Amino acid sequence: MADENIGDENSVENQVGDDEMAANPAADDGEWLPPEDTDSAESVLAQGEAEEGLDTEVDAQVAALKDQVLRSLAEVENIKRRATRDVENAHKFATEKLIDGLFPVLDSLEKAVEVAVSVDGAEAIAEGVSLSLKLFLDTLAKAGVDQIDPLGEPFDPQLHEAMTMVPNPNAEPNSVMDVMQKGYRLNGRLVRAAKVIVVKGD
Image 1 (cartoon, one colour):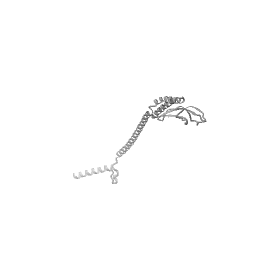
Image 2 (cartoon, one colour):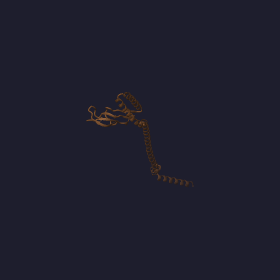
Image 3 (cartoon, one colour):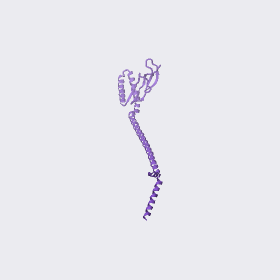
Image 4 (cartoon, helix red, strand yellow):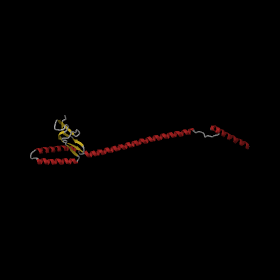
């Protein structure tokens, strides 16, 4: 009975050895190699490629969000600058309509001074009106108004309005020969152009 059991065990061992040889042909040379699991290798490779693709997509989304944030910040800064400029202009030119309505008063005072100077015995009146006119102009100057009186200066179409051109050999061509109505600027902005007579060129 013992010999029969030993024979059965040898048969089982021989069968196991044959199965391993069949699963691993390299064992014929005396070297045992583990069976290849190709499905697992391909799965790991595919997973790595998927993760790499996901990282690239995430990087692209992060870059797009950064660009969007930077554009939004730039737009906010532009809005703030425009708002600041609008507020400054509102302060600078809030009185433009009021001052524009005062120009006829200035014209009348200047005309009154001219008439009073030309009349005998009206020197006191001329002096009083001149002082009132000077006080008026000084007050406007404090509000940012400056007068444009370009008599004898070169004609500037940005500041002057040419009413007519006349020849004058004693004056420079394209210069202002006479000022019919003085101009005014408010904080550097032209409010009323000076109406002038320009010397005609050759």
